[in-house]
Amino acid sequence: MKPMPVIATPREKHYDVIIVGGAMYGSSVSWFLSNNPDFTGSILVVERDNTYEACSTTHTNSCMRQQFSSELNVRISQFAADFVKNFREYLGGDDRVPEIILQSYGYMYLADNEPFADVLRESQKVQEACGAGTKVMSKEEIARDYPFYNLDDIVAGSHNLVDEGYFDGATVFDWWRRAARENGVEYIENEVVGMTKNDAGTRVVSVTLKSGETVGCDTVVNASGPRAVLTSRMAGIEIPVEPRKRYTFIFDAEQPLDRDLPLTIDPSGVHMRTDGVYYLAGCPPDDDPAVDYDDYVQDYSVWEEKAWPAIANRIPQFEAIKLTNSWAGHYAFNTFDQNAVLGPHHEVENFIFVNGFSGHGFQQSPAMGRGISELITYGEYRALDLSPYSYDRIVRKEPFIEKAVI
Image (spheres, rainbow, N blue to C red):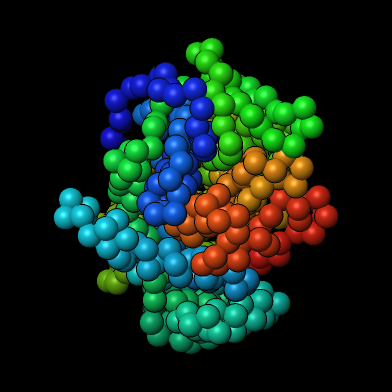
């Protein structure tokens, strides 16, 4: 990701919209909003680290799937697939914008028991009704198409080769930032450290920057990723989002497979896929607490004791593999229901959430950025009704149910 010129001081004393966080979501919102011909206001993006070296955006695997159990999550990913495949056109046909390839190797959910196989079958009906190409496969069908799997404990699988796989998310992010700035969005490297509300407590009227300036605003967007609660607390709001560590491993195989490896979700919780000439695997640790916001230390026992054994068990051809790279990143983990928190707070009406994606963030960023742009511009969602993700559901204690969470 290309660093932008370091500008720490805002040019103006007041902005129509201040976005706290300039990574994938801050840049998605800023681009969609600044690209909306019906929005004519000013936008300030405040990003604490202009290099983005430690943010979730930099550590993502940029995956894309339509295999969700809720129709809304399926629709969101379908828009994302269309956006990625037609990226240049969405950015106005600019010849400078590269074409982005969606590597459609598909996801393969493997079920080792009938109850989970039934969940896959129920979800497939939802996906099929949305036009997705998902099919539930028997053990025999999986073995026919992907003979390298060990299927001794598998009863069924769910697979889709249409608009599922991975893409170059870093390029999407880079061009959202670049195009937003060309649209007049102001990015600064600074940090929001405080917020002031009106006397009634119903609106944020200004933010205070670490450098000391106080900047007025009409709307605040919380795009702070795993740090979402630190931002919301400045407005007196709690949000159930915390940083959870996730591990990614890149490995080389002594005996490469003779075909692409779908992103395989193993019953062990380990997932793996083709990654160019190498392979990628990932998983959470078995003990999965919240971690410090700056804790990116790797625990190599996760590879030795969890990931590698699961990989070798599922694909015996991978018994001889070599780890070539690895990293730890953070999920912005919504402890309430592992789905996004989106839209305004029910009391602080101009405080807008775009938080808590719990690992779905990159693939959901086009639809969510578009939705927040609509909400700010028109006061309502238009292309997709994203209101089921509202903060109100947390107040009501009514979780958004999504069974396909990785």
